Length: 426
Image (cartoon, rainbow, N blue to C red; front, top):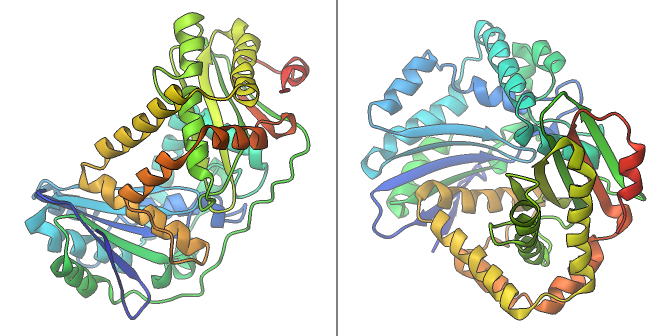
């Protein structure tokens, strides 16, 4: 069972013990990401994530930081999303003090040297180029741009080449002083983690202070007709993402959306995977997933298909959505999907880093919503999944699968929208 310790500075430490493990993951998660940026500063959350690894007074270089963790075999990295940024170190349980010392030192004492900022611009632009050259990654960003347009929610987390090249030390410091506020941070210790480990984390993270935090702009969802966004690229395969707006993270019906996604295209036995790949031979990858944010959410099906079969693939996906509208799910299929979802989660949560992310992500999203309650243990989550009924699936399907709610993003050699717009209907 997890335990939350709140420090005097309002920073929260979550202890999530796992019986029998010999490792511990220390994950620091901050309630800030690309949704908190204005257009000129697009990508600065991600840029800052890189800069925290560039040296402190105690560990003056990237090599000094990495070699100290490498010498104990630690795994360490960071990630930036739309609504949170995370930094983690996974080590043998006896090395937790080192992990916490390095993490707190990076987040409190980074130098942000101008020479390092200028050097890192090239690194991040190459990262951006890598994403743009990888349609499996880029299609997700394109779909969100289709959904949310030219707003913080619709812009790429990494930013643009123009914004990346514009950042300077003043920008970086200003963002840290605004967004890295103690009351908007979570430290999660998972694995060999109890009261002793929480006390150790308190020692390292009590120095963080509350700051003049800037909230994000709330997403406005006012769609009245299907949305379509094309990204012209000479490819040998068309990559598409076709989905609908759904529900935010804290909505009580969100587990139903998860199950619907799994029914449609969340496994190798799912409906759309079977139809597009096994029966039609149109795609190698097919997947449906849901993405809930604090103030919005969506479900989408992605696939890579032959260039001349794009319309056919879209119609197959739309037919799959219509079937959920018109035909109740059979009890056997629903039970199988529930067990699949529960089983996958149980497998993932065998590792301390996955457990740390499980609790920290929930905690930080509830912080953003001004709530402290609502964190689910895996057991409570499984109980919610088991309660979903056939009627629940039909109810939510009728709510989200409507024509004006459709959105389609496509990467490939296409410029004409008219043909695709005509088939976007349920």
